Image 1: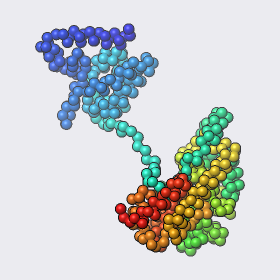
Image 2 (image 1 turned 30 degrees about the vertical axis):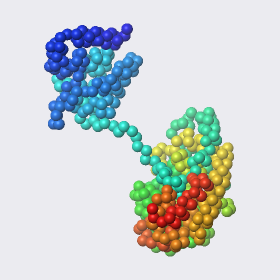
Image 3 (image 1 turned 90 degrees about the horizontal axis):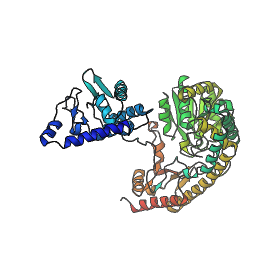
Length: 532
């Protein structure tokens, strides 16, 4: 029998003997005064905490369930018993099982109750007192600290979620079921088997040379960029690339950045985090309008020239040249967000603007549409004038992208798996685009559908007979369909009302053809049926 078991057996026998005494002696035992340690004796002699006098009145005795939390720790192996007791007592306080201002038993009594040495309890009390969980004073005993607050019982999930609609046409999400799990797992096994130990250390903040080399080959071949591996920075998606550039441009005195209007609603917050202000600039049929750009006074501008978000415009060759002439004339920079440039359905994708002048264009892309946004993996090609500052900012921001993720993606590129994934996605997304266009023609005759040549969304301008836009959106929402109007992507400060009528931005990549047809039918039925 262990010492702990011996102690508990002795106490059990004593308690049995005490319980057989007369009721008068039992009552006397149960209501005895505090002993010299400040402990109130409960039934059977077990220690019960007395309450500290507080402004709100004395605390009730400690619930026995709280002390039971310490029993498993008392049975831990001798080598870890002290740490286990400290952790269990800390958790009892943190979780609220031991309320603030509750008096604890003396170290001698608690050690006897748990069957452990008094030194372990004394050490636990001293450690938690130093951490602020407990408080004590000479001759005053040990108490639960009043500054401790119970921890939240669970962690919240703030990730964006689907709307729960029958059909969700909100753009920006690919089909995550197309993620190549088998090929990705094979690449991961290969990397873990071959990666040298030293490459698990802190990486080059630009990224692993192997990945930067593979990216340079891919981007030059598929997107026509001038890709020097020395100027490629591996980032956590285009959002981080945007923030990095914002910090660097702000440090160069560029406190305002032009953005397309309509355009991505995220740019304003991302540049604001870097201390920069965004200036909305209008579009015309060829891309970003040049005259308002010249009048704005900005020296940097964000563009999506391959497939403008959200209008779907592909910048004309003339507008691309005018945009670069502007950048040279003001000693400025164009920031090219190539968010879905790989997906073009009528012909080969339009080459990146960066290929025309790599010293005036910073180019950003990611795998968020081709693989999955949760990978948080992207790239940034920077002009030489910005390269050193961007790399240093990346270093101070996170010391570089995770090494295993980089090595895995490099292998994925080198083995041709990424090219196969792009072809697979392109086939699936072309079918879904065709399904959406056909369904709109069937259920909304006369609708003008644009932006269909590339990307993962279209613009649908409905005839005037479908009425006021807000009323239309309310009806389709009541029918279980989520859709965004083009006005949601227009910067309010621009002061432009836009053309009247219903203009929708409809994403289709994440929806099956069956769900697309059902969603468009539900929209049409909701409009015909009128208000619910």
